[in-house]
Length: 367
Ligand SMILES: *Cc1c(COP(=O)(O)O)cnc(C)c1O
Ligand code: SF4
Image: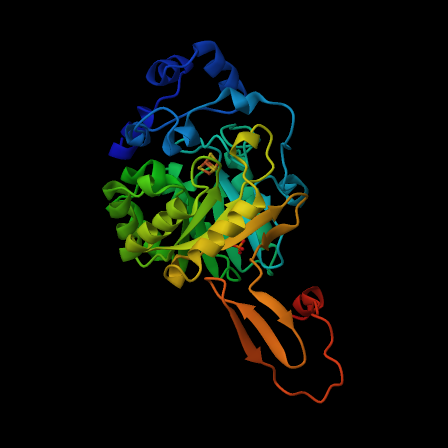
């Protein structure tokens, strides 16, 4: 057994352990655990400084999860875009490939609560179906290996999956989505990175939500991945009481750049059942975006997106920097709110058409 597997095995997971460690009622923890699996690696638990802090809230169960009043099981309607259980095919040229039902720790706000932690929902036998689906669909040029967390699989199982995907001629790039560098950085071993780097072009998107998660251990893991030539991106979920202020987000994005991770997305929290206590307003997200753009390196500014309920995919939200557009001028607002005017190009047209929405759907069909 490898070190990381031993650490993982020592995770807090029984209601008794969790209740004792965090001073909770065993019965309550048991109730929550029946709805969504509870598990916290000893490493991540050691980063929790006090009850209710930003790391605590992400992984320690809360009775608010049992609130029935709002949220959907599958807000993104991923199941409707699943031709086989392990594949979500929503966009023209890329698929999500769900290969693992387990995670190192379970985020209480997880969008895929309905599947994650439940072996019957992301079953190993579905992996083969997924590979066949990708083989049969030549338009798929980008495969995002996700779950659950794919890096929970041992090196051999993981390599079997990645090498099968890599062997498909029309697959140009492979991406891995993982929160392991945050929850269990010890999993990133020399052996793992030496295996991964055989399958370039390979990208990895990691998941950090708070600056306190960017520890020396995480830095070491991320640097090993970067040294293996794997470009790293980060996905952050905007969470109430955890990272919903400008200074926390700015610090997080800056710390990620230092450990060679490029911030990629900030997600508005999805409308998932039992996670209402984590949601913030969209105005808060826009305020955070404005507190990044211009105030710090452009590299530290991710896209702010909502994954549209009902399966519309990710939609970017951008504060209004354009105040007006006329035949003569474009009026713009800069990051501190000052107004600037850009003179328009003189055109022959009498009247400028209103802002157009080009038909990308028609374009994409020609590609
Ligand atoms: C997020 C997501 C992707 C990847 O989207 P990018 O914007 O290309 O990173 C692909 N498929 C599904 C279903 C997704 O949710
Ligand atoms: S690591 Fe990802 S898939 Fe796993 S519980 Fe957290 S958000 Fe969900």
